[in-house]
Image (cartoon, helix red, strand yellow):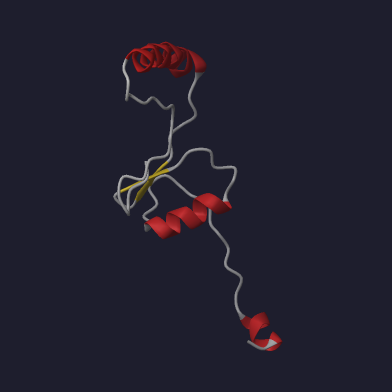
Length: 96
């Protein structure tokens, strides 16, 4: 590619992710990786879901109790795993 043709190519701008966007998995990954300020976004059946920020009283404190209970179960049950808010790729198109 000559220097002249490189300057004619438009620069690709990554738009912010928004709740309800319809994207392919590749588009979703490109947006998510380019926007470090986005802390949590999910792609389910091609639709972007972005949860509201969680409040400590409504969610945070109760989650500690649930994680403690699950941790005790994991310690007592071989082969059981526990994780908090992981990204799981369910199939080629879904990543909640």
